[in-house]
Length: 420
Length: 117
Image (cartoon, rainbow over all chains, first blue to last red; front, side, top):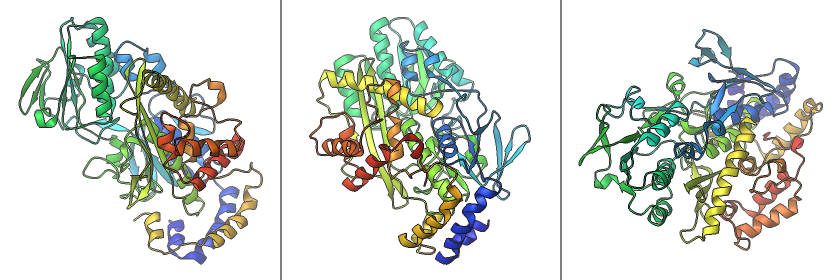
């Protein structure tokens, strides 16, 4: 690729290229950036690229015609919210070529994406935002068929409704078991927000019931805040079993809804198995995922460490200290769009700073948050020291109420920006 | 090896002056499009929470705030003079200079502030 040779050729050549390349970009065919995946990361990136003076042609490849958002889907499980509040279309994507097909393969030599109908799309740069795949090979007994009996509900949609309906059908006095995976996984506080809102539902509708979290970890995001709130709001209802107490689930049996751990087994009335995860399938197909199943990236450009010309944003990327969240995905996508545009214009990408904010609901009117600021350091996205952290443990009731309001308004704002 | 790593090797590094000269030379090609100003580090993330006023969110919109006003509020969040939920934790991640650049960018009309490099 000429531009790469030019970049290697030293300052003089780069300056010449910058002066010559920019008019070329405008006078002739616009360089095409293909974005694969229309979730928070991919949709944000496509829209940010399309806003950049219009000198980049943007194609967004997303098989579904609507997107069902994961944030707040735990409220759907607890009967507090309808799925329509989670569902977004792609109507406002002006200036973006939207293709509702599945990307099947990437030819990295020819810089070409192959769709599942055999169509090829050439790209100058490719952005992969495939989100997560559930790893149905990681937990014995747990495959796609088992997920119809013991739902994961970790991709919002039919799985969310299945788990909601199982909870609604469970008799009072039943046992709900949640299996939480080891790090890294999508939405680190998610299993614990889920436990909280299910506990809220049980306390309200089925007060003799119990909820057990079997965890492959010894700690988790916002743990002290969650545990304090559980003691206050749901005393005796939630039991958290950490790794060191035998919490790691090693096998499941969907026929009996049994979860087997290193120390014993738990028979559930409702079993929510959140299995280990990895980057979405196209990341493996394109060769940008490493042995961990996730995608190593340059923290300035989000360009893959394994395949030049391909950038990875959102949950699929190894984001260093940044959690796999919708907010992170949106912030990374905008920084990546700026870097992609800079590279196409032969300019030096700016060093980004990124922000994450994640709210969790412990009850409908009780919110807690974690925030962080990140910048590239030693080849990874690292936390800016002195910044970030979680809500105070001793906050007053009105602060918890305010954070619950902010949580909902954050969701309205970000979905309006990304899908609006 | 990525582009960024190559830059760290010192090969192909452009001085700020040279880069500015090159950008100035390239500018005429962009004359038929609105003038857009690059988002300084961190600025593009703000809209993840702070949306248009028309949304009616409890999280304040940053529309129609002067740059100086935004910078002063961020300073107050950073040193704890203004109480906050998340903003103190976020404001402490930015220097005064970075904060001023973000505030100036946020105060521009929307058409001028896309996340252009």
